Length: 477
Image (cartoon, rainbow, N blue to C red; front, side, top):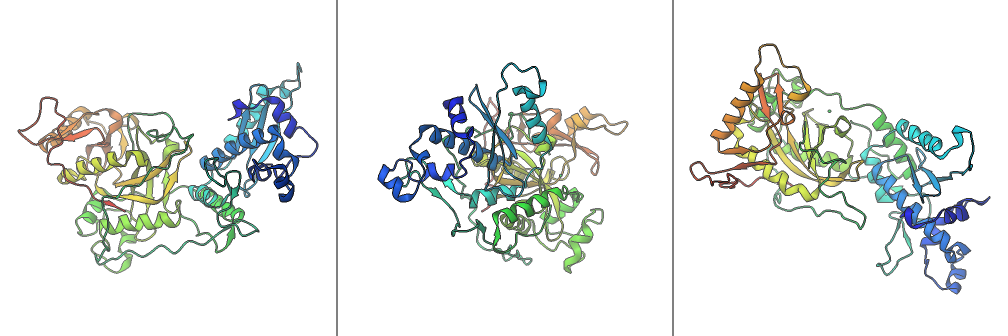
């Protein structure tokens, strides 16, 4: 960490006329080797220099955090020294460093530390946000500095490195899901393991500050075969720059009939796309097919038809919202994504939706199913989304919308709560951010059931927290 290094170390390493471009490689490759081994390997004197080792570790850690969070700019500070960092737009395998000069008691405002840091912040705010697939590609291809506990500590490992440019193999084409219902056997109960490291303290925090609700909007070319990391990064960044997911949401009636294998909803704006596959009057796929399709679609490209809505503040205590559009059939809905540590909570929430299937599309959103992602979706908070639950778009929350004239929100809310109570649901998180107005059905809908419980009618305990008769939710693996 930067606080372990002193300004003298940064100035000693970065303040010279020649910048040590191979700093990471030289310090990581057998940094504990004996002098004769160092000479045999052709490593520079920096390996024996404690200043170089410390600076290399600090910069490498900052570089790692910048990559996994998709940041173009960053900095490290020792308290008496600052180093500005940037990763070039199309070359994520390069880290540029600038030692901020101390001009002492200068009277020039633009030369002060605070002015230079403010400039860096402005550049960071203007920088293009890389897509999630860019981050995944970088993580899978860039070399890693192995921990000391590994017997090969000090070596850099290059995934897919063959002595030249870092290459990203073309992923297999996404499989086509069956349209006849002959779905392969699926293990519904296998859970993903959380990917933790010594410096990961984001478990349980999905997007920075822990709010108390999970509220409820891309498609680009696949990466070219044998493209270099730089080419892939440029392509992926271009995909993100092309715009957000502008497809309209499917209606409640559309997704409800999809779950029931019924007729297409003529009122859904996406019905012409749904019906292009030949069966014009009925849905061409099942809800389970759609879950499989999205899973395979995101396994191929995390940004294809998937937009993370955290930039609009649509995240909560455990979940963050996504807008999903299937590349085939054009179904558009939302997904609540959670980290691996919260996967069980998402499964329990799916149980609530299963128990209340008769209320779906009326008082609560339509639940299509849950999946575990093949590749975790990285958030800028450093959290990783491992599981998703697919739901219909319930509408804007009551704290962020203007209701039609003559609508009594309290009466509408009471009606929705009573409907849940009649089915044995106790809801402990009733507030405006968990209530939406749905124009299609003309009702208040209740969302976010991670704090709801099912009790058996007539067998409710005094504390009202019994989970009785809970139906087992299904999750696509």
